[in-house]
Length: 78
Image: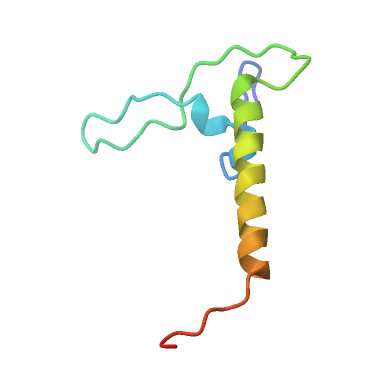
């Protein structure tokens, strides 16, 4: 990596990488410009509000999934 360049993956929602992308797109194809975004990097002492909200949302989704797995299958046509 060259100085002044950062890298992150967007494959994991908890990284929040897609939160910092812009609405800009290619003029010819209208493809989103995901690979070029200006950022300011600084140390933090706690999760951001977005990270806290995502964690709560993700926990709720996982709880609902677990509840659905424990629920007995319903018989169709009874």
